[in-house]
Length: 242
Image 1 (cartoon, helix red, strand yellow):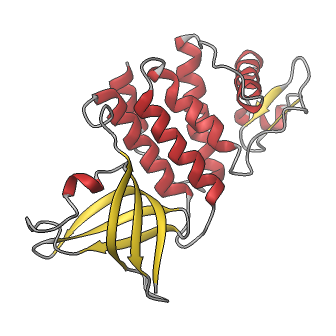
Image 2: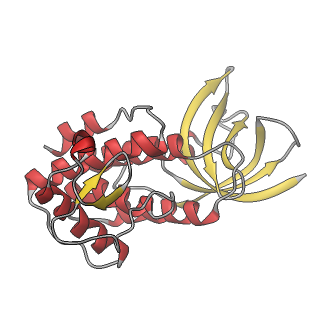
């Protein structure tokens, strides 16, 4: 059966002399693997640049039921990434986004709302001219809205703190103080999430708080969404954005 789907290219692995296996996140089937045959040949209509990581593509594929590897018939780049692939900062952020996509989604799980958000995040990054240092933090916070782990902001009162393990704001509990942020940092996190939840314009975050909040959100992802698995790219990202 021949089907058409949009996809975000995540990773390419050479296969044989002239073919490539591409790991992609698709709007129809979540994480999926595809083989593109003969891509290294001069006669191939699909070029290696077409499947650069992060490219948003439109695929025509031969879908074989119960197969873990599908074959690409045709491919078109929907949103060419020009500045991302030539800008070291943007490219580092893209690699971070790709790692988050790969580690927070499932094989053959359709979620068109998540796909549309991730596609728009990459296109926004391509078009951005400033505010890049805060982009990874805003990306993670917005993405939480689709994960089921966005904290309930109605459960807020002056003096409350955020418990990372429980994923909520509330009174400090001496029995769980190791899982809690201090009151000041909790308020900064609340203000940030409130801005994200109401889709308000981004405000500038003081650098010390930005770094702390980013590390907190990373820990939150690793604990709740990744079940203890680590995200590798933040260390590289921190060096580039320093």
